[in-house]
Image 1 (cartoon, helix red, strand yellow):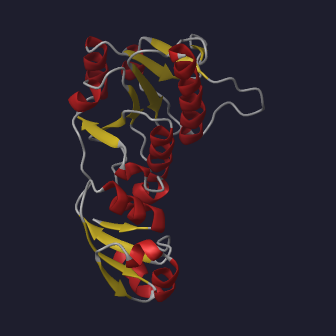
Image 2 (image 1 turned 180 degrees about the vertical axis):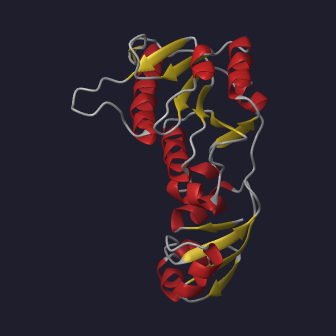
Length: 237
């Protein structure tokens, strides 16, 4: 995999979950970013055009690196953690949204993120850059069937909450959010699939007081996760 973007590569080096084999960077980046020079990895001085070609992107910030593929974990590993907080994404297909959600999930101390193997964004270099390197620290699992995973989570003692702007959903601050929790977020423009929604113990909604009737999935994830974090902190104190 060719990672690109300063934060994505810096965090890959710091997290050490997968090796960084070599780095290509412009002279300006090498001069101003001491961590590049001190990385212990072979660094090649190249042009901006060469970085663009190697990374197949113009969003590289003057640096790219060759790494191993992303180290996914098993869903069982996430569920085995005490009182896990897991974010499950139901066919979220935009890698930018995946990266942004993972950045927030890592920031609130979530146990990990679960994504389906099909019809969903994978952990790509684009997602890694959008996460600002958070994906190098956060555990991500891929599952064949999200509804089956929710059943496994419930059997393991977790409560599953689906985010949905529907009448039967309760305000997101109503649950106490303690113990094992899986927060399920639906795809862009579609929301949760009916079967996935039916597998949730409860549906929750954010208040929308303006003229729009929905939020981008990554914005909704941020609002929900920080509300959950506050409730969990209050419950533990």
